[in-house]
Length: 80
Image (tube, rainbow, N blue to C red):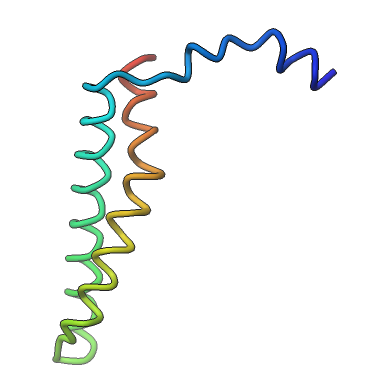
C-alpha cells in the first residue's frame, strides 16, 4: 500500500521555485533572530548579564532551525 502511494505521488509538487526558496530563508531567518533576541532578553532578565558566546550559539541554532521548520510552513501557506 505504501509503495503504491509512492508510485502515484506527484513528486513535481515538491520542487520549489527561487522565490519560494528566498521566502523560506527570509521567514526562517527572521523567526530565528526574533527567538534568539527573546531568549537573550530572558537570560538578561534572570541573570543580569549576557554571554556573547551563548547568544551566538543560540542565534545560529535558532536561524538554522527556523529555516528548516518555519520556512516550509511559509511556502505551504503561499501555495495553499
